[in-house]
Image 1: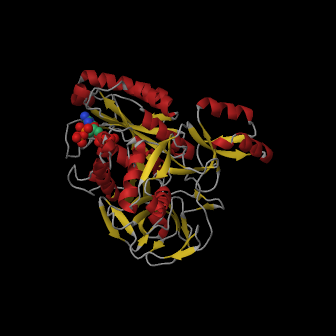
Image 2 (image 1 turned 180 degrees about the horizontal axis):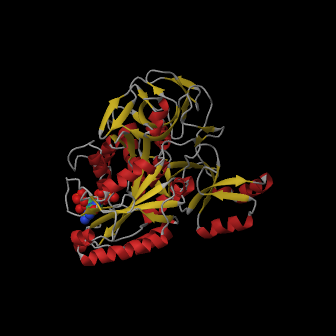
Image 3 (image 1 turned 45 degrees about the vertical axis):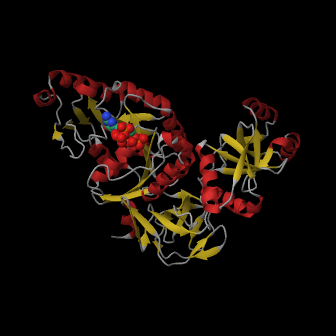
Length: 525
Ligand code: G4P
């Protein structure tokens, strides 16, 4: 197979949802369809159960599992599919945001009875920002669900994207009869099954009696009505509109019962984008370029506390990555080669010789990488679109063991490179402030500092509402602002100016009074 064909046949995507909507189940069923696993339950999620908040061992165990399931690759009908796992727990939302930067498209799972929930809404904001094409899967139709038209309206309104149903449910819960595939025009009758993959029945003419025969007169009547309405409201799918992230195709089903998954997967491989060109600060990089480029979007520390080894996850953007070949680490200017790059197939890891655009490889890292780093064959490129998000929780971090201040500094440094949280240094009192998106991170940091770096930290409260990055259109105004807000100014790890507002009111006033400054809520602008 040629280089171009290898790129064309790759689909790299993430599945996102509010916890419990069925992301893990859907992931597993896709692997089952792809023949990558053979029994349900073979893949454990990296889901951090809600009860795990104070159970560090559980967090550690789950983190271990998540290395194996960070990327799940498999082949389906000649298409190489890479599913990137995204932690559902909201405390790890930042991890999910970054993983989305390595996805070429996204599948959103929504619970048919609950509709769009908070976490989904937040993640969709990131997709919108990056113009990522999304497909929606409405799950749990085997349970009583909302009316499908209402669900579509809810999705359209809450996710702020036009929708286009490609399959349609016939009833739900006890009256659930099956799915009509609008895309392929066939009927799939529902029979609950954890293991089997149901076959569809060809019914191209829904006016025929055959439909009544299969699902009963009443349901058939209702389906005909629905279909008429659908035709009136939703035009047929324009793939380009999907690729431009203007329209989201919608599928219905029950992941647990293997139902509606084939429709989703078959359509997905047909319409979802192959790896796309990516922006760098210097120029766009096309996947079919001969020379290898890639960027680090995730760093995962290993489980073994005696080794501080980490795995850096690299998304390949162009060219062919080769084992034992020298590549430029653009940030530090060093040439590096990798003898054991790994690829991820289902839940297995294996050393590979080559990888193509769209693929994700794991590189053994002893602390040389940080999130956003670029690897190339020599060109100095910097990939864009890997922002940090404004954290919502803040604490001062203090050294609790004076003998271990070096270890603490190193630990904080490396954990921040991994993207566990963000560090700000107050320009006022020089104290270090850690900002996170979830409360759990503080516990994770404390635990890992102790176990991996033998350093002890102590948290002290700080009353902050938000950290935002300041961009100046007028240098004099910035200087004036810094002078007046000296108490509230900090630098991030890159040395950029950050304003630490202690209330919504204060932020609002600052925005009002300093019109020539822009207050950013992500670090990339
Ligand atoms: P998540 O990763 O999005 O958090 O959700 P997950 O797949 O773990 O699913 C959450 C719960 O919903 C699980 O039950 C799962 O079995 C159930 N579920 C998923 N898809 C369907 C579906 O199509 N129909 C029905 N009725 N249930 C579904 P649980 O009891 O919380 O977990 P488990 O102990 O069964 O794993």
